[in-house]
Length: 137
Image 1 (cartoon, helix red, strand yellow):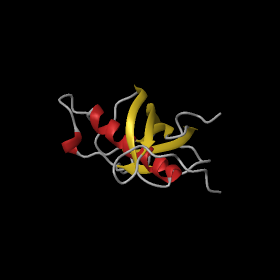
Image 2 (cartoon, helix red, strand yellow):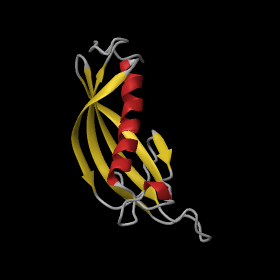
Image 3 (cartoon, helix red, strand yellow):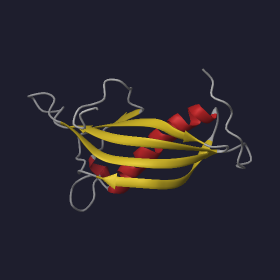
């Protein structure tokens, strides 16, 4: 099993982003809604690829905030399709942070900060549900 406090070496990050001061809450760390938005973007990337076209988010099945995110952390989101229905795609997303990359000492620690599962539905140009096509290999 993957050590939860190291970046997975067997997968590629779906999305990487650095939160900025404008993304903070009143406590001074990154607003949870900002992280949820990044998770939704990462999940939609793999869902769009699997659906071979547009999708829309229909459910946040689970979302666990495990640790805070700070300004300057590098947030790496790893997304993986875990279920495909006739019109829906369920994706697991794990958010890691690399702390201290901007320090003179170099890279610091890696931590899992959130785990989530979202469901997307494939849509057509009129925003109606459509069938998810068979997987292309």
